[in-house]
Image (tube, rainbow, N blue to C red; front, side, top):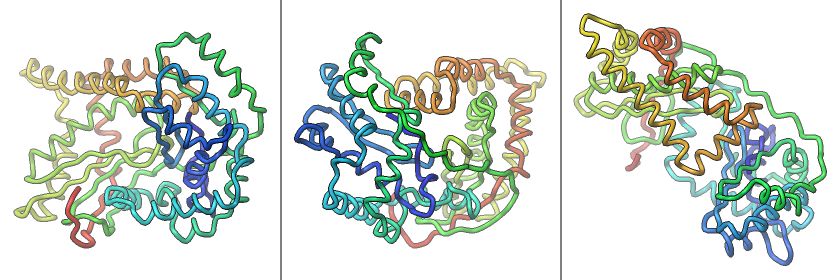
Length: 383
């Protein structure tokens, strides 16, 4: 189940969406909490709060479909009615402890977000808030937040199973479909990430200094898919010019994503040489797709880029959680999932060297990139 509410909707109560996610495991169904019931019947369950959404994922034997849907019905229909003040206080302390124990990968991701998204952008804030903001939250605040956002019109359910649609409809009718319709609060606005050639420096929890370069991804789904297809060519061009690590990463979330590359040279490289390698790779990327006299070699190189992108799309349909979250995301965007998937494949299959060259010039241009020096803020072993 994916709800169209995330940390961008926190407002001044930073961390409230993450707190709501935890609290929605503590409602009581029968004589047990939802968490206790899931521990008994699920082979896996988890929840995730991102900038734009909150997603609950559960896997269990097919025989438990009714019970799983009943659990989702309680989340959506009963909200906070079975949660006491003492349960709220205990869960809030648990979320605060989770924040204290955040691993280095989350700290680094927060640093990268702050490096790319400007002051005032909702994707710049830490998902989950701070210890101070969480400590200030009250049960009344969080329950009002749930009432505003955990509504039928704000949710998409994905059931992946060898089960007939009629059986799913029958299970839904027992409880989940009975949730009374309520008006949802308007989602918080997320401005697009503006193209910029700004250079800046930010601290990051890494071992050595690195350089990050980031571009906004277009809002057009077809162009976005095609850019993701040619992104590895840019990574390869940079890797050919330095000795060190070149790591691609997507930042932001569904409404304002960005494509970024983190470059870290080895002991023999300087920041100037890394910058030079980046500049030359960006300038030469469109030429990778130029046709020359040896067209057979050019076509082979381009086909590798295209086939790799097609393979990645198929792979995204194989991994169940990733696929189902994407299907729900399409629906929350108002798109038909079958049409959306078809458009992605068509976008990559119709990609030609001429189109790739034009996309590289238009979107991966140097003037559209943000260059950020990541300054190592203390030695930390690991990635």
